[in-house]
Image (cartoon, rainbow, N blue to C red; front, side, top):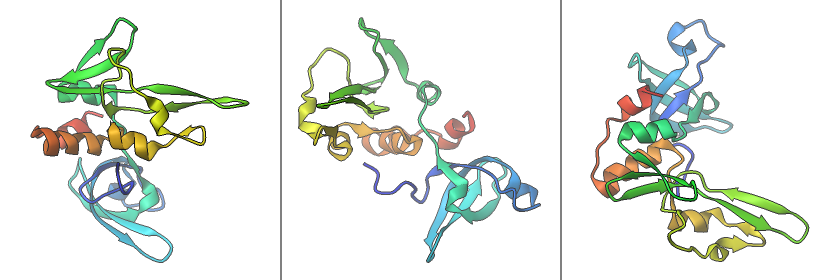
Length: 178
């Protein structure tokens, strides 16, 4: 599980800064984090804009993580498969990415835990005891994601493919297609 929302070398969505007349800083787009610096009351981020390669700085609330999408998975090379129950998974070589929703019934109500994309095969071909992740009638996300690697953040997926599977993806090409 990710230790921090943002890390150096992450790719992010830059929301633009309309408090300035500088066209480069005003334009929304994708960027790579070069530096992160914490001050007393805010974080300052150094970015390299993907499109122009300009380097800028901004406060951290001007950036957002890039969520992994089905489009990203397909562009990376994953093939979509649907099982008999209609459950969608994405497969590339021996890597399976899927998601699951777990109904949690409380004494007076119910809730749903939605995993998002994980390195896991949640198809019906094997039973998983989800009770081991329950704490006080809720799913403990840290326990869950320690067993099923979370790749909702596109950076986590790309880093997993490179470090765990030796698959080096052109990150800027995938980011640019978003």
